Amino acid sequence: MHILCAISRRKIASHIIRAMSRRVHSESPPPRSIKRAKMDHLTLESFKNGVVLAPMVRSGALPTRLFALKHGASLVWAPETVDKAILHSERSVDPVTGVISYNGKSRAIWTTHPIEKPYLIYQIGSADPELAVQAAKTVMQDVSGIDLNCGCPKPFSTHSGMGAALLSNPDLLCSILTALREAMPPEITVTAKIRLLPSQADTLKLVERIINTGVSALTVHCRTRNMRDRDRAMIERLKEIVEFVKGMGKDIAVIENGDCLGVEDAKRVREVTGAHSVMIARAAESNPSCFSKTPLTDVHETLVPAYLRLSKYLDNNWSLTKFCLSQFKSPHTKSNGKAEDKRVRETIVKSRSFDDVVGIAGGWTGEEDFKEIVRAIETREAKVHEELRLSTAEVQQAISSTAADSISTDDVSQSVSILSRVVEARSGCKYITPPGTQNPHPPASGAPLISDAPRLLPALISGQDPLTPTPTGGTPLVTPVL
Ligand SMILES: Cc1cc2nc3c(=O)[nH]c(=O)nc-3n(C[C@H](O)[C@H](O)[C@H](O)COP(=O)(O)O)c2cc1C
Image 1 (spheres, rainbow, N blue to C red):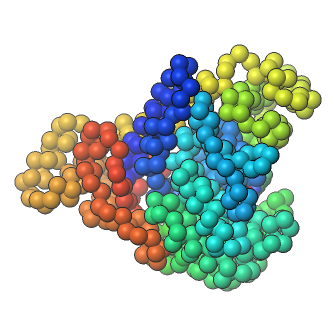
Image 2 (spheres, protein in one colour; image 1 turned 90 degrees about the horizontal axis):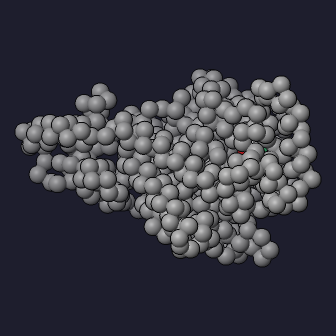
Image 3 (cartoon, helix red, strand yellow; image 1 turned 30 degrees about the vertical axis):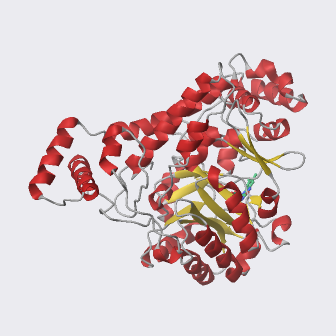
């Protein structure tokens, strides 16, 4: 399944690059890329073996998410948007850049771009199942998953029963998740992000209920509602939770959140917690390249100019851009690094628009930066694709051994069978999805079944997008990030 996703994501990226190059001559939007993006979707496996960008109001703006993806984030969470806010917005697509805006009366409430859709989880703040469903339906064409914020301790969230207030109202929390799972099509994942409860026993009870709603993954911020970010995250409490979820016999990823510094540090976190994946907030807010094994240093020189150009190109709100830049921090490697960093910061603080920072942004246009991001996403998918590309000889060999065994007379199962033999021969492990597997979500989800995957192998060989990919469980086919 990862192969299928990789191929189709790669095609999305190529389409967007082509659309972007065409735009010099044409003002038309890149509708093909948007259409393509609709065919891709996340699976239970997508939440495993990854390092992901946390939801962050303001700091998780579109350019930050794109840079996080460029530097290796496996998935990106959008900042929490309260259900009612998005309901009254109007969706528009920039005909030049392809940026999609959900506009309120005076400003864009949320923006996204089709290039991030295969990796994008939209986070809802809600205390009402119906409103949550309406909000999810409003954005579902542009996202791959919906997450419910059950951890925000700020009064603006909790006073209306949202965020961390849901932790003490598990009936409501679970009814929102159940309603979302029932209302969303199966290709849209539903997940939740919680905090630890003061008692481990209560946390486990809550986790059990959440898992039984049919979520595809659960993120646990390893602090309690009353803990501040400066308090050390209690990550050692997560191990028991991970084991508990495994013990439930569900193949659901538990994602650790709290105090992870970057992709290398995520190894430590996974070792201590046994978590399937790790979510990073503040370290990524300081440096969105922390997802790379070699994060950028001297960000005032290496990242700030590119961030400015991209933000201008994507028409990212200036104040938001300025705020995000003000959070950037990294080690300096040059003797004058500190002084230069200070100079850049001061210039940005004084600036009132993108026009005032041309000297920092440098010569390139943001379109080039955007293309580089698209290429980076394409390259990482291409790597997976290359690793698993089927040679003619391998296909022939698999076809003849399948035919000899007369595994099936049905085209689809025969194709799957051929594919599984090739993959088994390559990786030495069993193909993860048995032929005929239908539903990527647990039965409790109430999600309708998807029909079987037609023409699976021909799609792989021909490079056409598969229609209904359906993985679940087993050994991942993609080399783990960690
Ligand atoms: C600026 C900022 C904004 C945040 N906004 C959200 C949000 O919208 N939704 C959410 O669930 N958590 C939000 N959080 C919490 C983070 O997602 C994360 O749970 C917390 O910062 C702990 O992770 P860390 O130790 O890696 O920073 C925010 C955190 C920060 C610093």
